[in-house]
Amino acid sequence: MTAENPMYRADSASQAAPAIPFYAEQAGECRLFEHAFQQRLPVLLKGPTGCGKTRFVEHMAARLGRPLITVSCHDDLTAADLVGRHLIGDGNTVWNDGPLARAVRTGAICYLDEVVEARKDTTVVLHPLADDRRVLPIERTGKSCRRRPASCW
Ligand SMILES: Nc1ncnc2c1ncn2[C@@H]1O[C@H](COP(=O)(O)OP(=O)(O)OP(=O)(O)O)[C@@H](O)[C@H]1O
Ligand SMILES: [Mg+2]
Image (cartoon, rainbow, N blue to C red; front, side):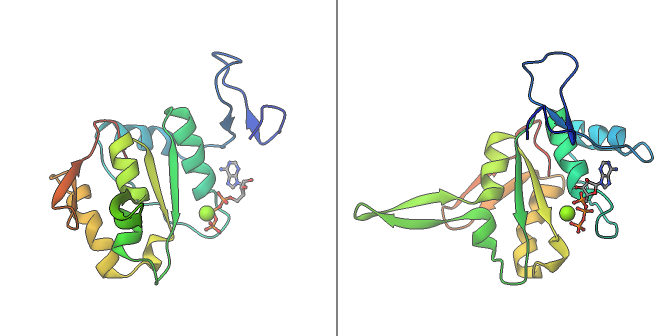
């Protein structure tokens, strides 16, 4: 992702700012995404292959100055793959955040690519995060992490 690549354009405000991936807006979706981001609402993108869903998310993350964490969903994906798990190291177990927990803690945008491919028992962890509770319960640790004010997925 460099400013020399014609697929990306430099932020006009500052040459030092990271390049924003080029995205040609189709029908006001950038403003819609910004509004959802401000209101901390999840966004569901639907459209045929190659229509620009991934590029749109990359563009919006850069534009909003948020890190982007992408998870490619499939039917073997488990809730632990999203939320995290205990790993053994140095003779004891250490909690390791999954990509979703990391996004919630850091205020990143979490892009669940092909989320429809994930099983219901996996996507169930998204419900408390997407509804008015705005928390990600981590059953294995007995704790929850609260969505940072600017986070979005
Ligand atoms: N609105 C757009 N603005 C700029 N580039 C676009 C746009 N729509 C599509 N593209 C181009 O088409 C390519 C494919 O887009 P992208 O990978 O975002 O599609 P997708 O909807 O995520 O497809 P898939 O469902 O297969 O993942 C991009 O690399 C980009 O070059
Ligand atoms: Mg895509």
